[in-house]
Figure (cartoon, rainbow, N blue to C red):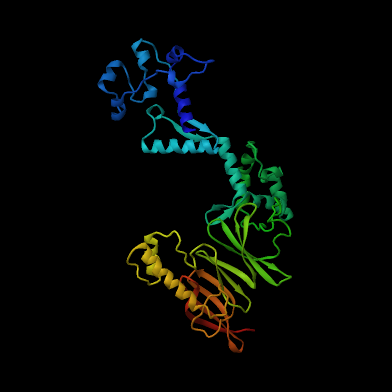
Length: 419
């Protein structure tokens, strides 16, 4: 596509005399038949007109602004058009061509005849793309996220006073829906200063994302996800949430993409008694009422290490973390790490706890907790059950041994009565 654009631009820039002198097919010129040359390598490298070209009457070193050799030799006035701006929609082929042109311009490798070219996406298409992005994705605005569906909630599902105000500002319901059309009225309506001023007075908007209330999907509609009870922000653009099932009295941990509507809903853990979920550095931490703390791996290598596809530098880093010798070939380092992981797995074989339970090696039995707060993947604060009706707020320092997550230090902060 970039080559096609380049050919079209060069053809358009052919001067009037050379166009008349070039044979055409049904009034269409082919660039390979055109001999409209106005390039001087010396001038272009110096970025100034050389003495020889000055004697010929040239006043610019840019080829598209110079008289061509044919007109100069024949004493003709060289009339030509110069393409300064290339603008089109952002279809993938056009977008790739734009990126090629942009890269060549920045690196100084652009064709001399295109040296004045400026790349601009079509204004209506930019507006359409921005509006579609605002409708399809939860866009980051500082430390918050925003989506067109929030305006739909304000217009259609808020209190009577708010609904009345926003229906005056946004008269058509179509303006708060994602419509694939070139009509600019939606963008203009949503950009009005009066609407922006009203929104600045609103503050936070409570909007339901599970289940979806407007655009139903097979995995996110009424009745598909029963009783979401806890949510956490996962890695960029994803969320985690727990859905409670009253029949089994258990919860399921889901991962979902923060699209509008929410999509790519994946079940990570079924049949858990968890009532709250927290997230940090690829790990989902689960807490249930009078139960163990659990750590579910969301991203690979956040708890259990896998060595497949690892380069030597990565293996050396892993070996150093596990305090295993990192000397030798890739295979030697990999073998030592595998032996270490095998021995670590054997250490846990006698334990009755679930593989997701956080290990407390200093305790004779698995401690029970009521709730927790996650600072990061190595530091938790939790409410711990103790004997005699006493409970404690404890600080937990965690560490991964490449197989499971274990608590290496525990500090009691304060005790309190369960009542």
